[in-house]
Image (cartoon, rainbow, N blue to C red; front, side, top):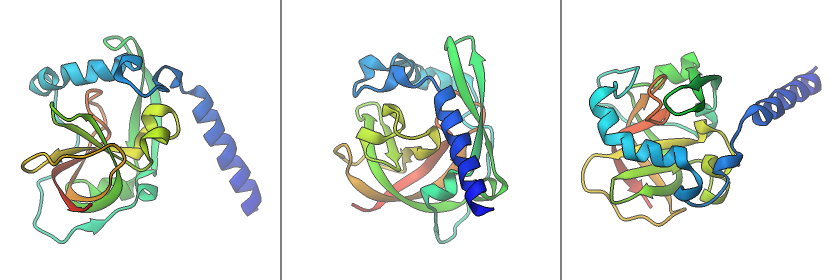
Length: 189
């Protein structure tokens, strides 16, 4: 029975990957990913006109919960065409376990992707840049925006770090990643 479940899960994963149109972003530059340029260029203006997140919880003073990327993969995506972006976008439905982490102080490790260091856009990835979501090696649940508490540290692509901050989920704002770590601090580099 377990073998049948694994085969079914593999078939579903292959189906989801085959339905994704990520070939346009399988290059290592923003010039090859016009949708990412759009997100970067509209990030500031979008934050003024769109909600920062669709799920908000006030942060509490508590010891950070250790979170893994495997835990964060418990999400289902629905493809919906977005008129403004002129392309299909994925909208998440988070599991109850993930929703329970929203607003909590968490600690997570991953690879740094400084997408726009001057503009303050840093991404933490479960995978190195060469196989992260932007290059087609994984899904959007494997990346997280880091919104630093104070001074933006200097990073190189693929620096492996441990970060702590308040996890904020995003279900509807297409100008933000699904996972956001607010008040982020690097606790280990």
